[in-house]
Amino acid sequence: MKKKRVALITESTARKEEPTPAFLFYRGSYNKWVNSIIKYLEEREFPKEDAFFVSYANFKIYGFEELVSWYDKTPDPNSKERRDFANIIMNFIEERYQSDEIIVELHLSKLKYDKLIDLLKERGYEFKVYAEVPLGEKPNYYERLIKEEKQYRKLRDLKREKYNIIRLIPNKTPEEAKQLFENFKHKAHLHGVDDIFEELKQVLKDYWQAKKATDQAKEEAIQFIENEDKNNELAHFLETKELLASLFQDIKLFETLNQKYGKAMAKIERYLVKAEYLIQKEFRIRSSLLKLQIVLMKG
Image 1 (tube, rainbow, N blue to C red):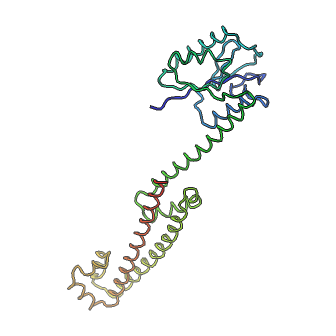
Image 2 (image 1 turned 120 degrees about the vertical axis):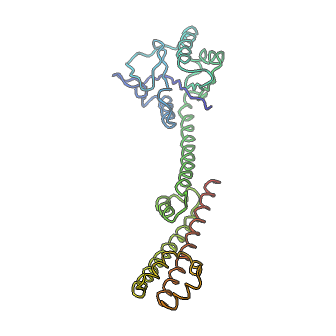
């Protein structure tokens, strides 16, 4: 099971005069480290309910969006104060989380929270200390993390989009192909499938042209049937024919009708030839869509 992340964030000297949600209260133009921590958590879409600011002023722990009122800067804590606050923080964590279910992220100064680190080790909590670099370098450290997170999210989003494309063509019909092409043709290069989309563009064009020709051929056949067939023999015959081979299921009947209604039968034959070509065009679409699915899955 993937462990939940719990973030503990340092306070900053940036303070608002009015009660303000903590993530805004500690933001300030000259507190680049805290600003970058908040920006990093937001970029990750970190659960706000699992992010807390900690302050040595009255040993307070504030929720990410909890209102915080102005307080004066406190001096650096001594060893006893660090130990006392570490116990308060540990009790706070243990009341809310099981040790084997979380990873504690420490966006804190090790000098101020050394006792907390000791307690986390003693009580079996997995944790990670962020930005173990000099204070002036901490903002750049987080900027690198933010850049990595953006790249990760971009790759994750691309992967999810690939899965979505695959999902949208279950039956590989011309209609599915047309919708897919219209919605994703401008993104084909992002997934490395430009060539397949170009192929799909051509096979779709061929299919719709063939469908138009087939529909026209069928209309012509129906018109000739209506003119020649007064007994509805040909109308019934056409209803049961979808492929060329079906013309000759009953060869004797075919020959009889061909003698009686030569022109209309010729139109029926022409229509079925067009229909066969249309089926071939549809097969090409299905083939292109299957190829697309396979490439996206492997990519």
